[in-house]
Length: 412
Image (cartoon, rainbow, N blue to C red; front, top):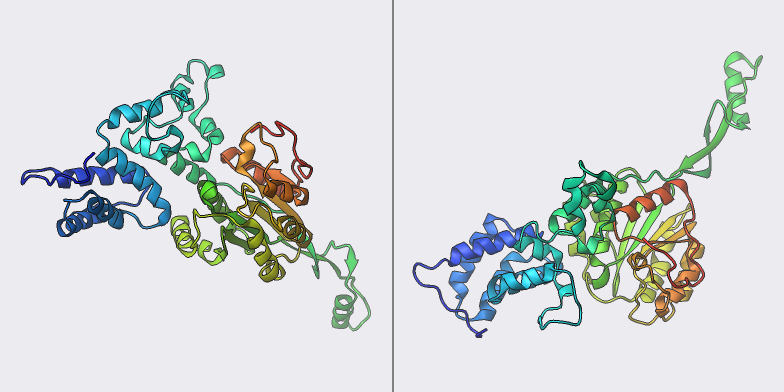
């Protein structure tokens, strides 16, 4: 395509096309409303459309609020404005993949399903949702949309499916087991006799009768600390996990969340907002390294030095969500994981790579982390989050994965 965008005629449809482009972005999940469309048209009047780069960045400056939205905007812009064979390319991406053939300039796996669904509503859905219409005829060979959504990977979800998954996560609950503390509370059926309370009660009757007062240990829910990897490969899984964390934080007072990429950032204060969208929006703005690189060892070292004494007390449970791919090749990671494991009651590692049946602990970061975890679980769909809630509720250890896993260690 030429380097310039041809200026529209007096009776052109630039405003109408910008409006349709805004609808595509809104269906893809970007918060684009009528106000932004008006601002975009005014900005185009000032910047002009004689150059392609000016047109691109003018729309980007109006429609994009966060860095994480840049990839979706770029793909949508490429298909909507610059590709002369939009329909043919999109339909090729929706057909069964035959890798290694064809001359498509954009690899199919790099195109977001949310963009495909926004350009062709209903076409970007998974094949598992189509047989849902036949469930009344032959239920043995079909799956309901709800069951298909439970097993669908977060990365392959369309905007509508992702919104439905968020609603399902908001209804999840994890009933943590309370732990006994050193303090005692009055209890009529307690195992211990409270001598001080018994003598105080006998004074009311002149000391003739000494009623025995009993007590038992006070119980309190343990702290729940989440360390979330926000690198580029973990962005979508971490965002859904933060929805899960926000859902259970309303029931427990000691839920803490920290993100790490190239640096460590606490987002506990942001997740306390009652509106989950406002909470995640505020948290994403507070994280400067979202969708960047990963330095797991350096970030865990910072957590152990500055945060562990404040957060990992009274039997804390630590949830570490990461794929284990470290930019520093696991330098010092084993030592920091060992220290973290000894500082908490239970360390659970959530890794989306476990969705692959042939997962192997080959990266240096994964090998350094595995010996120091109590449970190793997937976190790639709604079913895995339900299993996590069950592990937290029942206090089970989960699968023993501290030894390096063999080929085909887990199939989810």
